[in-house]
Image (cartoon, rainbow, N blue to C red; front, side):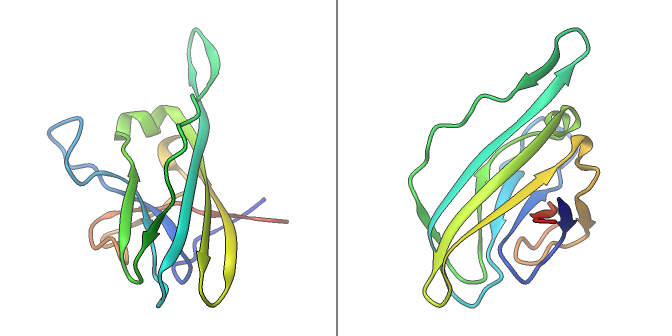
Length: 141
């Protein structure tokens, strides 16, 4: 799979941790909508794996299905909460399914390696409005 950062289509961004504690009210994974129209019937599924020195590879526990929701044009919504320490040990992927009035139903995939090595850092992520990283989109070869 090829990897690409595209800020003109809906994208996954991870807000930069604020030093001083394991969780802060704004950290986490966000779905950002840079389009000029709302994302309707949004569904996000998450998966991945992490490794432990003495246990080998361990698959993540699938999340319970969440109800579909809407993300207004030019806004973002937090859909998960993880810490920097968790990203250091996890490889994670997201599948996003949404509908727009103009383009119908679309499905997009995103993923990142351990330590978010392939995510791109920004001092100010568009739509999110703060420091963070944007996760690359997975594209068919």
